[in-house]
Length: 331
Image (cartoon, rainbow, N blue to C red; front, side, top):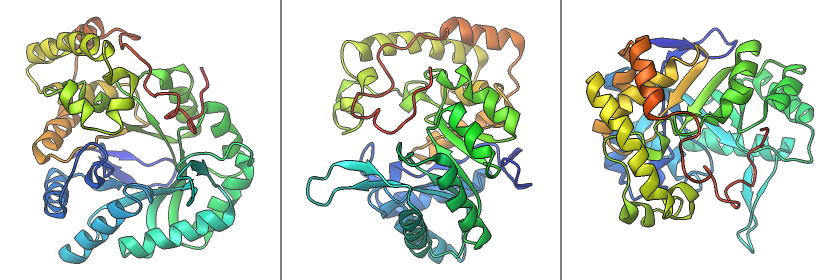
């Protein structure tokens, strides 16, 4: 497995990681045995970066990962986790808390669930809009100085916010959705990350399975609480998006590789700072995505891909209005 540098840390991690949201039922149920098999396959493939959060299953993802580490005699992964999203206990309404007390307490709870004393990377999962990012960055720098984290980052922030945070302390990573289906990071974030030496950790790099050989049909989308409320997976958008990505699947067949591998290879070509973290419950699907790391797409193949899926092809927004609460819009 090829490696890529994690921000300014001097650490090198596998060129793709594994997102662990899916083991907590986000797109469908998954047993602990299935999660263990997935993690085992990731290690076999040379993937050493595992991404989770305290809100994935309300701590379930971290707990399962901690049990896996205990069962296998140690981490075997460089761990990233996140905090900053809370829910009102009475109404269930989601809100964001980037206070020193909350981030510190959440990190301590995450470390306990994971069974480790330190994580490689700790993100603010969503920005609290009314709290200056400079103050939040100072809190994260304190957690690093305390030895609880090796580095820190932010999820779904704008390039201007990264610029502000960098004036306080180097930011190792910014996490954002980026793929052939979602190219908004090209409007400033890719450039900002490259300028600052910050890794751009790309989640949903295969477009929530639209860019695979087994895209979700309406029945699969309706079975997922997230997808059924996402504009790209509602009719008539879903039918249009499946037809559009059929062109991509045809292109991948001409290239001679699984569609997921081609999607990952395309993304890695967009810059050395980019580290995709595909999320799946299926070890075979993970292997298909990982195959993209070793692909060398030539100019003709890149042109074929762009012809199949030109920028702006997707029907529907990447989030519903409710899902847009938290991510920073910058374009």
